Amino acid sequence: MTVSDDVAKQLCDIIEPQLSDWRVQGPTLGKISLNGSVHEWALRNGGINVQVLSDKGVVDRIMIAQCPDTHAEAIKALELSDLASGIAF
Image (cartoon, rainbow, N blue to C red):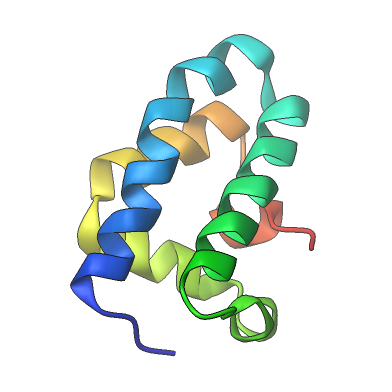
């Protein structure tokens, strides 16, 4: 799945402000928020939810390319090996 830089930046812009909340709330609530954020982002961008579900790793690839620091902080805050493993929908 290929997304434009603008769409990729939107994902980073959605996740980045939530990092401090995730650190406070802990990984359980943070993962719920991650799922909601990714779902909202996918809906906003042409309903790419099915594509994201079939390749959850796309979220990691997009964020590593577009905002590697935000990606690393999200993984740390959510205590995950990758964000794909935290996406449940």
